[in-house]
Structure formats: C-alpha cells, structure tokens
Amino acid sequence: MKTEDKIIQQTIAVIDDEGYKTLSLRKLTKSLNLTTGAFYKHFLSKEDLFQQTAQQLSKDFIQSVNLNDTDSAETQLLQIADKFCREIKLHPQRMDFLFFNPAINFVYSNQGTSQFQFLEKVKSLIKEIDPSREQELFLQIWSFIQGYAYLINNNVTNYDANLVKRTLKEFVGRGNSNE
Image (cartoon, rainbow, N blue to C red; front, top):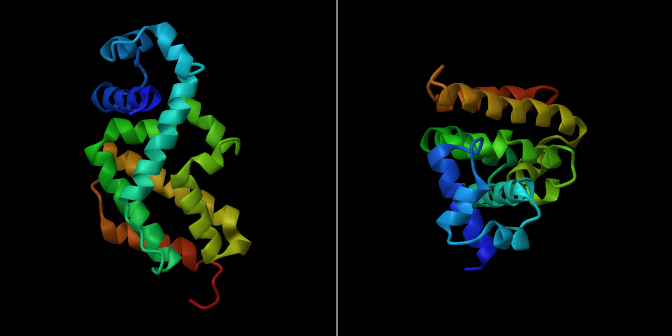
C-alpha cells in the first residue's frame, strides 16, 4: 500500500475514533511512524489530506451501496439514502466528516465535484429522473438526506425507511405529470 493510502486510511480511523475537528497531524504522523516533513511530501496541507480523505470515503460509500444499474434511478436514490441513514449510526464521525468538514467546500463549489463519487452518483440519478428539475431536485434530495441523517445521528428521531421512501417519492413526483 502506498504511503498516501496509509495516511488516508489512518486518517479515517482517527476520524472514526475521535472526529476530524481535533485531528492533529503530529499525532497522525507519529501513529504511522512518519515525520511531519514526510507527511508534506505526500500532501500539501491538512486541507489537502481532508479533501483526498473525503474523496476516498465518497468512493468507498457509493461502492458499498452495491447499486444495480438496471434498477430505476428512483430506486437507486432510495438505496443511497437508506444506506446513508443507516451508516450515520454506525460511523457518525465519518459521515459528519464526509458532509461537513470545511475542506469539503471545494466539492460544493464544483472544483472537485467529479472526484466526489457519492455526489456525482446522486446528481446523475436526479438528472435521469427529471433533467428539467435537476437543480431543484438535487437541493431537495441532498438537503433531505443530510438533514434527516443529522437528526438520526443526534437521536432526535429514529430511522424510518418508509418515511424516506415517501419523501423521495414526493420530491420526485412533483412536476411529473405521469404520477
């Protein structure tokens, strides 16, 4: 395994255990028997590490959903939302990092969107459902997934697969004259 990959994997482990807000490069490199100078040979900054870690988590997450491309886009979106809402209970720190770490802003500003596979998959499925409402649907669905997962993570509510299904159907059904 390459040194960059080892650093990213250790970063994920630290995030799972302690969160990302207090992650110390000094402690991280020490746990890998690296110097901070060696770290900077592989990453430009802590922000760069966070960006690449988020990209890896995004890739890992979307692969873990095991989507079937023959399923409808709506079904695949439901599977993604379901997986994310369940994953927030298993790995709350990791999911918080994936959506809310400050280095993730590059994704939302479209600079790194193509490298964030989770976001790209959601966007492509939404576009498949209704290209004329792509932006509206994206905002609704992405906000719902984030917000609902946040409430679950903070024990405000429990996960309800039927609620997720009804909500996504409602979002998708709006503006669709066939429904």
